[in-house]
Image (cartoon, rainbow over all chains, first blue to last red; front, top):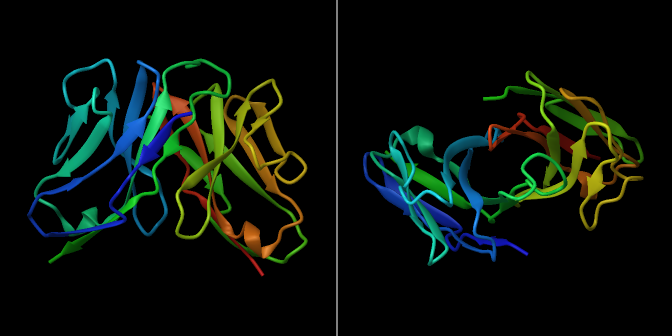
Length: 120
Length: 112
């Protein structure tokens, strides 16, 4: 079974600085997707960034980028120029690419989350 | 992307009662998922609901406690039955759309 580990329960960053959140995962599959979701106090799960395992290029979305190391099974999130609105819980998640069009596979497996605080 | 409306957003429930959560999607989707997030915890999958078939439940979740309906490709309901304080959680529906999973706003239930 796949597992996702986030070893940092809490992180803190100064506004405008850069912070990196760690995530490792375990799988025997070769094709899968990795995600970072942000959950602010409103509890809405917001997709931050997505990475397909078959792509070597690291995904980037504005101030958010990932360092995807497939061999090491590592998927860290870098937030540049941190803003107060970035303060939230961040969840790393894994999704198998098998069963894309049906079946019970295709759900997300989540890490325990990292609470990010941004200091003004 | 897919836009998901979830109701109710928040409710306080008496123990022993049941509550049905609705999830409406603005696009037709094959797979819908229901998750539970207990206070201070991560998300745990309750079940997968595909249109036209019975929901598939994860270990630790049973149909009698969490009956699910999926009458069409844009709508699903999750009922939390015979609630106890341990059921106080956020319940979230999610859908697969374009290889990405999107979430509703969540339903925050408190059982007293």
